[in-house]
Amino acid sequence: MPALIALLLTAFVMRGPVTGVGPVAAEVVAAYGTTWSLYGLLAALPVAAFGLCSFLAPALQARLGLCGAASAALGLLFLGTALRFIANLAAFAGGMFLLGAGIALLNVLMPVVIKTRWPRRIGMLMGLYTGMIGLSGAVGGLTAAPLFAWGGSLNWPFGFWTAAAVLALMVWLLLMQGRTQGLSNESPCSAPKSAADKDRPQGLLRRTMRIPLAWILTGVMGLQSTLIYTAAAWMPSYWRAQGMSFETTGIWIFVFLFSGLPASVMTAKFFKVCPNDRTAGAVLSLLYVLGLAGWLAGGAWLLPASVAAGAAQGAMLSAAFLLMASHAKDSQAMLAVSTLSQGIGYLAAGAGPFIFGRLLQATGGWTAPFVFFTAVILLWGLCVRLADTHQTVD
Image 1 (cartoon, rainbow, N blue to C red):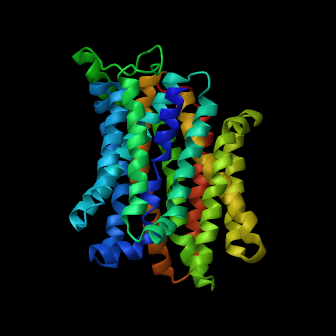
Image 2: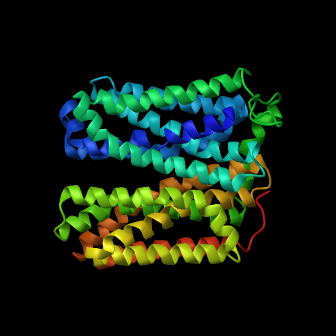
């Protein structure tokens, strides 16, 4: 139970500190005396850190052990959120990058924790984990403005996530100190005792990069990330171009994100009832395409479309972790494939909104950008199909 609490508390702080910034963007610009252009760069820092810092996870795990690495990552996240209390632009920028770095490390480490601690319940735990991540993002976006209005300061929405990070960190420290039950019989809370042990994760990562299946799984992770970042960045702009109010666009994005929560929890069962993984991937791709079509149609289609697209998006994230866990031979292989897929995947995902915008600018219309978006959905399904033809990452 303590390990489960640690997992869920950690997942709860893995998106909210980032999604809680957008709703108070105007207040951030005013408080730090910056421009909107620079604010856009600051808002992108955590996502950049997701990709860049993921590759540090194997070395950190080798030196500190799984619990130690998770605690260090949470420490970075806490420090990042705390720096945002300082009324200084440099401190805010540093805080945004550091909290992104902490989340990047946790992105890699938490699936390994699940595979190590709950090897026979991976499906259910991956669902709970990704569902809690989705809840974190939804809560961050939903509570930021009310907390600011209630407290009259950015310290309130930012402080909420600082407190949550402290709570999660305390539970991990208790696990490390042996005051509660350890994570598993494999003792992941203990650091390796030999130099060979410390070098193994990095060597395994290099070997993993030569395995085609690892790159296919990177595609599964990266493409679903591309979809969610592109949808969040551009769907409100499309709706506003069609005459929708700013407030209403926020409602539909929230419905989209919130609909992914139950879907992510049920993904493992969905994959089991499908004849094979490729069928499950095809169904999710079709569901997302139908959701996109409803978004473009607008009107009465917006609700079912947001639910359909959100359910597909939430299930896609769970599917990425499930496929990594099922194809990784052991926890070390899981660490390597998780590092590669999330490091490269998040770096590539950042190109999605940029490509969408370039197509919009180049063509002067929305057709080409949404053709690109649809192609990404279909390519995700193809990657799942290809993964289903391979066995394991050793």
